[in-house]
Length: 183
Image (cartoon, rainbow, N blue to C red; front, top):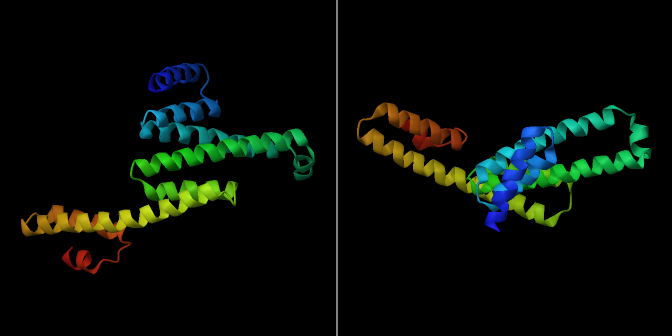
């Protein structure tokens, strides 16, 4: 499977040298990178696909009136396809962001995906898990930063201590009395 994904990455990369305006190619290569556990490249390709898809989604109805959009079956089919592609890219990028330790951005992606597909229990469960992970990351990350800052403070490395306290405060939304008073 790994070898197949590597070959596919090469094929999709070759396709992108010919035309960089193909969201499906970015999305498919992102799936391969995900399979290869290269989550940073997966996220980057999903971001590229999403950018192209969002432009496409805006262009389609802009060419027609709202009445035409709602009565044209071909146009509706095209918009549904764009929305499915958006959904896939958002969910994949959210998964990659979760696995790279970026739960806050994963939450934003999952929220957008759920808005595209309300009632999707799998997405809603993933969103809830990402929210819990984001809260935990803030709590654990803030505690680690405070401990690091306390160490710098004890070693009279005040500039380093101040920087760590400031980072911990940012994670805590400015509401951590120990960090605030020590800084």
